[in-house]
Length: 142
Image (cartoon, rainbow, N blue to C red; front, side, top):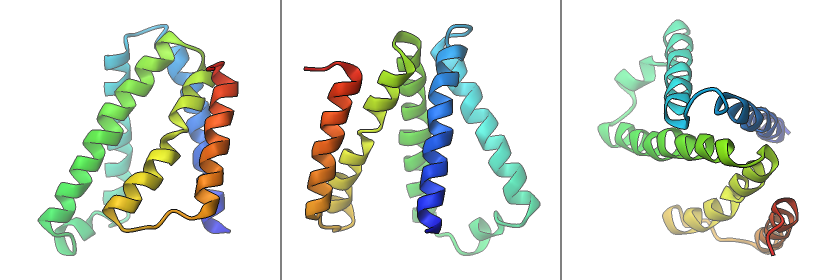
């Protein structure tokens, strides 16, 4: 139950963020908007992490390869993905950006099966069909 609450809260926050990105990109270009978002979120993470001792894990438990994996993940998701999502928000409506970016679930199932050995189940296939159909309806793709 906890994981569903966290995931749905994330979806709510991301849904609000997509609309805010649309508003922000009417005022400033996507690259500076994305840069401010990354800088602000990094600052919040550092303040919270150092404030309650969470960052101590980096000094003791984390190996260099773990930190490298986190850096690659951040570069892909937080920098490139953030910039592209903010850019998309400038050029189309929030509902279309939200629908298209939500298809990341399809990609994560495929990548997880390759990188971690997670095997897709029938419910993943059914969900993939529903996601594609829903995206086509929301975005007007045919």
